[in-house]
Length: 330
Image (cartoon, rainbow, N blue to C red; front, top):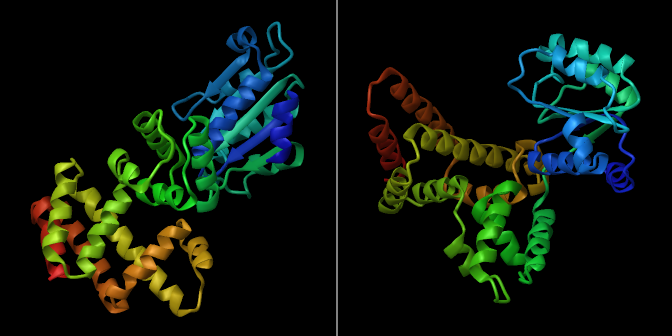
């Protein structure tokens, strides 16, 4: 990553790159920075080709790679989310592998994917002659720094616990965090300090957090609160099938946390193994105190049964989820 940053700064981008990872917001930000580093405004119009997942004819990509730039030193070809760095996309990638062999030095190729398989021919080829950048999800501490930096540009201050509260309230998706920061800046313009109350007034609570609260109410056997939270989700136009999916997900995270915690895994290890942020693990471990492992396994099985009721039309979706919530919160 440091090499890429220096190349962008020095305007020395060249050759072939793979940008991959779950943090697509940061990935796409760096693609924009690469474009600005390579081109002036007039050069960009004639020498930038961007191909996305809706492209049908791969030869258009290889043609662009073969084409010399027009009145500029470089042609930049960006290929986004085509799945060509996975085994099932190897047939599509074959022509690109061959085109890299003959690509003129004036061409810069950036292939951006969310996930990759390192055994593919295209990955091996680029590893041998280009650069591979992994855009890993930012951890809680890094996200808190991003939040503080963004707010400081608007002359607003935030302490670390409040910055972390924003992450826990709206989720760890960086693009959503930026949206919520803009709301806070608009709300607090001309003032000094962001508080937790400001976050609760301005920001939209993530669906994951709403579902966490719902499952928490279920675990605490607070039936009336659980039903009220469910009705709030319905009023917010969340579809019952998606609510069921999210409840199932939370039960699954709780079960994974409970089982791995019994094996003496710490929170950092749990977060890596389950592939969720550390603060989700911390909250879920607290939530598991309200459920036995046997109850969590049964809950997952019952969620599957409700899903089958959806698919067979045996019961109305909204009612089926409500009955599940009532059963486990009573």
